[in-house]
Length: 343
Image 1: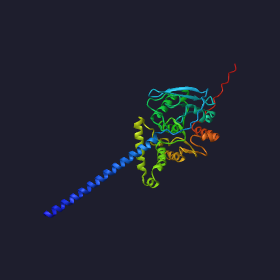
Image 2: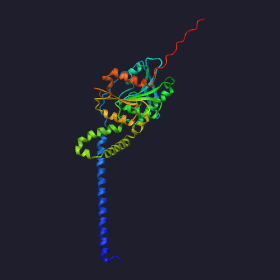
Image 3: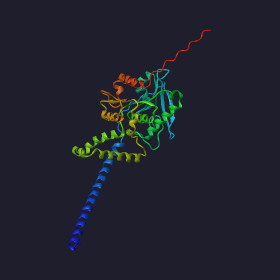
Image 4: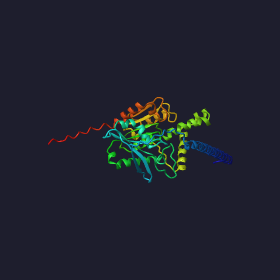
């Protein structure tokens, strides 16, 4: 039996334990509130940088009077305008669906695919919504971060190809520049009829955002603080930035990482400029690592800046593309000439 002294002592012990537990819970709550406040601060800070449009020096390309002007409708009723460039061969060996960079136009397809046109390919390109000659999407301003809108535009281009008997019979490959290359990779992973895909200046939203946030953080935090912040914590903050931005802009960002493994059975060529300060080669190597396929290779172009590989190595560029796409689009057999019968 407990004596009165034992009972009092036991009660005091329980009171002390309750105070300790209560103190721990209050400390935990305060720590969580501090964590939430810090995270909200950095989400707001990063969000301004994330939604700001960097200055792109996009080269303007003249209209090609020999190209066929084409249009197609998106699933939400917008008109996309583009051009179809015919190759030198009357029996094309394949069709290149070209995805231009943000701020670029469908006319740039003739420049990037010039070597392919001479090699017997046809090239088709459309301006994405809100860009160039295509309709704008109400309430949507395109940025360098691709969204589901751009993926839907590629679907509309694929439907246009299916509606044309002269195009749907051709082997189909995809090519994109910068943001267009990410859209091309994402679309190739979703549509198995795409035989191969090539991207120049390719990035993913997560990889590029993480790269620049680490650079920005050095302006606000000492290096010792950066070293003790776990990477999972930073990635959770960046995911919060994407959620908030998607909500603010009423969009769904095109996160391609879950789709990259779908490309493991198709040839992928990633072109990287060794002097690219916007998309460093490490990001492109990371994309190739996620694809994890011997069919995926990287071509690093010395002295090339962002999207300027063909500017500094035009002959090699054209030859590399011809060899890459030519492997899945062989030359068609020459048609047998008809011999008139002698009566």
